[in-house]
Image 1: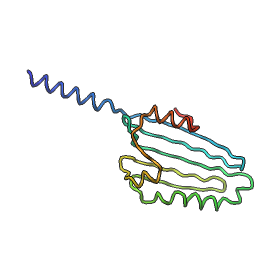
Image 2: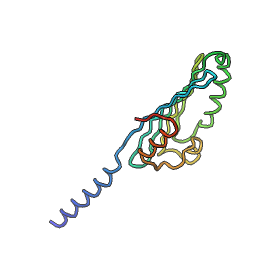
Image 3: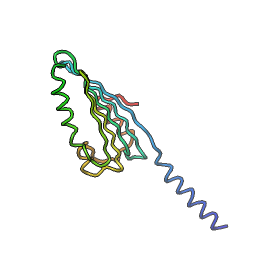
Image 4: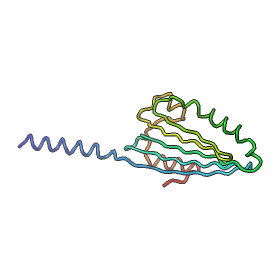
Length: 146
């Protein structure tokens, strides 16, 4: 009988400890327009397990209009060079595209698989942050979060 009670207590403790780290998701967007006919749109999807960021998906898009469309090839080259340093980094997948007036990049980062160098490339410091704190920080930076 005592063993049954002890095992039950251990089971309840394990469930409580693992149950406290449920998965939550945060989605944030931001759009900025410059006077140079450039519009930047960013979308972030961040997955948290407890107070730890485990996964991030980042979508960035620059829409170029007006006289700047003549320089799309130069913008595209610079855009690709900016993200080339992510090539082969552990835990990161990325893809860039360009059309006649839109440049975009998608970055998927599995923080559980990333090493320090990969985190440094994405300017990721500590992955320990609550969803509430991350949302507050992103909204202070101009993002709208849900």
